[in-house]
Image (spheres, rainbow, N blue to C red):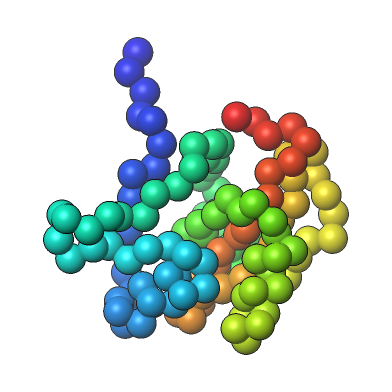
Length: 125
């Protein structure tokens, strides 16, 4: 059976696409989509990607209007949280260390939930 090799893109609506793309680039290092094919697009390191539907009534994403949450793998959760906080972004680091690593939650300027994950222990991949 053929299988997909990973996430090739994540597409979502935004009120101000330029401002939001700049926020992700400036704060999380997610390079904006290039305006021509000669410029490099954002590349990630290989690793586990979790693809999981949640029940309609979940509160895990925050506000019920949020239909998605993205999880970004990070190398050093504490360093990333400190970087974001220095930019005035509120980040909640979960104090618990789970068998698969550590997590933090934040929201982008349009209220979309973001989870950061520092793999550790039993990385499922």
